[in-house]
Structures are given as structure tokens and as C-alpha cells.
Amino acid sequence: MACIDFFTEEESAKIILDEILPQILPHDIEWNVYSFRGKKDMLGKLLFRLRAYHHTPLAFRKVVVLIDSDHQDCIELKSELEQIAAKAGLPTKTSGCESFRVVNRIVVEELEAWFFGDVQALSSAYSSVPKSLSGRRGYEFPDKIHDPAE
Image (cartoon, rainbow, N blue to C red; front, side):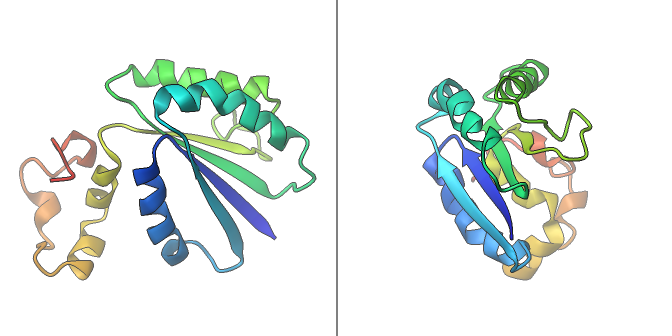
């Protein structure tokens, strides 16, 4: 059975993923969400955690790392994540390896901005959200929405 482990830097991201993953992942995929105590904690422990996956017998186990940019240079942060995975002996999706084990993703503004990436789904779930929202000024690019949690 395929399995995806998600690493998030904070508990709030875990709460969101625990809610939406059962709705978007196929039923034959097992998943787990593990949160850290902030970005510094995650970056400090990530190599140790990923090394454990290097020796796992489950070839179908993948890891998705979700981390906020917190206005850090995204290219530098992505490079740091890629280097950590390489030190752990795990190929990443970015490396182009077909049998990648790690997917590193940077949450540019806030995790809540992701919801604005699918306005049709938002509109279906919340009748007060108009289907034309993505065409409105300020909502064209979800990662540029100031304070999307509001």
C-alpha cells in the first residue's frame, strides 16, 4: 500500500491537512501528518527524520515537506530543503528522479492562501463566496493575497 507522510512546521497546518486529505486522496493511500514546533524546529530536525526513511523497506512511502517562506528567499529555502534530503540519501521530485521519495513545497504567504487556488471549490463549500472571486482584483494570484486567513 502506498503511504504519504506530511511534515508541517506547525500544528495549524496539520489540522487543515487532517481535514482535507481524506477528501482528496484516493482511499487506497495511507497518510500521516507530523507537525514540528515552528520552522526553526523543523529545519533542525528534518535531516534526522528523513534519514529514517532512507532505510525503510516501504518503497512506496513518500514524504511531503510543507514549510512557510516567512519572507525568506524561496530559492535559498528550497535549496536548503533539497540539500537536507540529499544528505539523508533520499531523491526529491525536484531532482528529476523517477523514484523520488521527497517532495519539498514552500507555502509562500500562508497555508490559507491555498484555498483561493480553487475558487470553484470554495464557492461550492461556502455559498457566500462568489464563483467570480478569482477574477476580482487582488484575488488573481492566491500567494499575493494579503492576510488570506481573514
